Amino acid sequence: GQLQCGDGMGSDPVPCNTFAVDRNLRTPFVTTWTLGVERTLTKDLVLEVGYVGNHGSKLVGVTDINQVDPNSAAEIACGHCEQAGRPFFSKFPYLGYVDYLSNLNVSNYNGLQTTLTQRVSHGLSYTAAYTYSHALDNASANEGAGVPLDSTRPWLQYASSDFDVRHRFTLSLTYVLPGKESRGQLLKGWQINSIVALQTGQPWGPQDTSNDFSLTGEVNNPTSSFERWDFVGKPSDFTSNQHPIPYCTGLGPDGSANGGCTDQYGNNVPGSTASTMWGKCTAATSTAALGNLNAYGCYVLGNSVLTPPAPGTYGNSGRNLFRDSGFRNWDLSVVKAWTFEERLTAQFRAEFFNILNHPNFAIPYGGPNGYANNDPSTGSGFGCGCSTPDQAGTNPVLGSGSNRAVQLGLKLIF
Image (cartoon, rainbow, N blue to C red; front, side):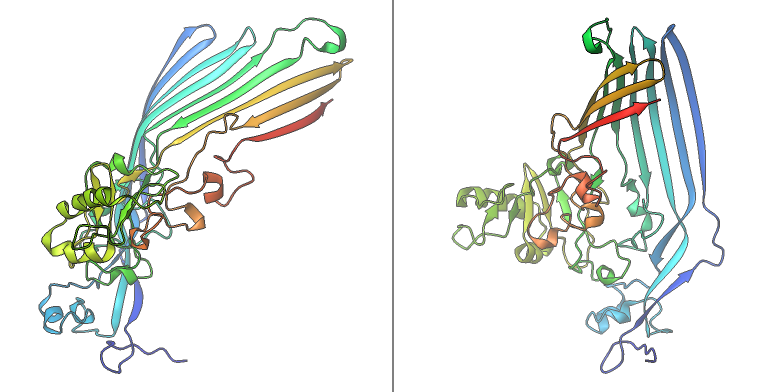
């Protein structure tokens, strides 16, 4: 049917959303600079140390240039009817969200990269690498990045990139065992390969997908980056793992648990403990936000607290404030080769992925699977990784981070 747009008041149709592009849109570009030093320590051992930096300029991003101002005179006069608070309302009352593409985003990366390479010596060779780095940006996705919660201050989105890893260490090693002649070649042709990967956590942050605390209506914008809550304490207290962050819904007039609080395992905690947890929530909440606290509850771990903000305000928990528990993995393989005459070799391989069966967990957002355990409005599961990285990435066959897997193979080389 025919598209109809109105101001949404009375019997008028709802406003229509539109998309606009800066007529002077520029081509984004990245400037990169590096400095490296290489030193031969022995005839078989080489150390490389390098600095890598880059800066992304004029990266594209989207803002809502028709964002509601809940404090505007027109908005207040109509009793916070939302549409009246839009900047274009007087001329274009039938327009809702006006998402505007422009060159507003930037990115930065600085990294110290070191590599120690051992060439084959007495059957041993390895490469050990360590990187200390920091990546920052306004939005990490080139496509599909959300509109900032406050489009009048898009620079507040500038934070650690979604893929930022501060510390990463890898070691790949191959060792050909000394051999000697024996029956059936059992004492020669053996080789061990190993790969170790260790890295600190990736960022995540709370995104409330249902509550319009800011009174801007942006939580319903189809490209919204959603609302945030207020955080007081140490971000490291909210490091995610396989358990959700304890949640409280308040106390009764007599101080007993009313709905109560749950611990990291999802179990109800005793009234005295709940009272202490709720006390931390109320102490961290302004008078104006107490109504939202009583309505939506809070999250408590250690001395750190996440609470809903006061109406008409933006939560202070910035983008990518927290981290996950990191990634640790050790793969090992054992190879045995038999040589038949000069041109034929049979190679048997036994490969062990995540040989220690160490548990690794994805960020609470859950990647493409959309677990959305970073939404505090749900009241449960918040802060829980709850899946391994391979499952979260919808790649359980070839993805990394799964439980231990063993693979056997036989290869003929001729």
